Amino acid sequence: MKKVIAFLGLIAILATLPAFTKKDDSGLQIDNALNLRTVTNTAFTYGEKLEYRVHYGFINAGYIDLEVKPQPVNVKGRGTYHIDGFGRSRSGFDWMFKVRDHFESFLDTQAILPLQFIKTQKEGSYEDTDFVLFNYQLKKYFSKKGSQEMPLDIQDVLSVAYYARTLDVKDKPIGTEFLLNVYLDNEIHALKFRIDGYETLKTDVGKIKTIRVIPEVIGGRVFKDKDALKVWVSNDDNKLPVRLQADIMVGSIKVDITKYSGLMHGLNFK
Image (cartoon, rainbow, N blue to C red; front, side, top):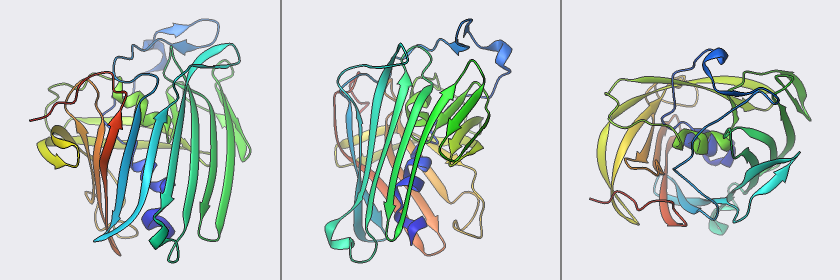
């Protein structure tokens, strides 16, 4: 059941938004002192809040809240976006599987790269924590669980959703594939996904024009097949995660946006 409603898994899935084909580090615009690139962010800003409802089948199982804190936070002399992610099971679902998860990412405002990541995970009887520092001079991360060399385009499972929103995916043809590198529990995962289509969704906040994305997953264990997971993001300058849907071996999961505030741009309503 942990793999069904765990916030960790849901955020990792939400993170698979349109991104970019991986380039050699030599092609990045780099700060010579810190090995940090420069990325223009016109998609999100301080004070943005997003709320989602998690359904397991027909059951309202829980909620996810994402927030960019209202003020920048200084981390080792660098300005950052302090991003909070909370996942919790609904009180009526706690008896079956109680979830109380909290993720924090401190995202460098110049490079849109994580400088620090914190995880507190409580799911049923399972508990886990992690604290990670990303060192771009040494090209290594240091965490409670170990350390190793890392690529300069690394993201954590929370920051990757925000970084992907800064990228230009407008009018990309169906079938275009993308790659990302994501840190999770002392491992670096290469994620591959593709644009599957364009669709207008009816949501709690209105009808929104979206881009549909399919991350590549391994079928036969958790997911029914390799295309069992779909993510929809708003087809506008926000690139806002709107819906997630996953067909798994023991049912289905759907995550829908229910409320938002503090967006940089208006949503692309039909």
